[in-house]
Length: 130
View 1: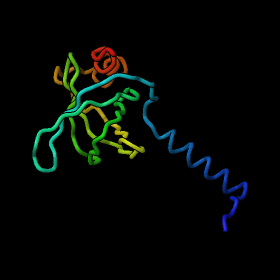
View 2: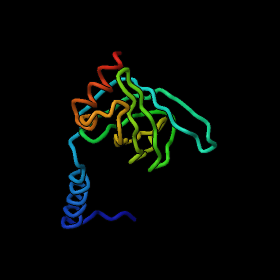
View 3: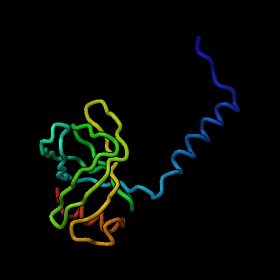
């Protein structure tokens, strides 16, 4: 038998959901483009795959691809201007793919602005025209 939550329970659930969303350090901006991702498999083999860029923030970005990465793992995202070393922060299974949240750790050109929205947007979006 299903039970309809009471008004206080529903309000608490809505508040909890809002607090989870507010924990994000940076706002996200929708983005679209293809990027190339490199990583080392659990067997030590170097792998690469194209991924679809979904959104960008000042601290990282989200991609969608067919591969599942372990949270805490490191991947390299290549653009025409630089390589970005990223840590996997979140993985969500989709019906036919995985949505992967990445945090930028460093850039191959030692850019101090690699974490900014402008640098990520130019490195990821502008470098891979459709």
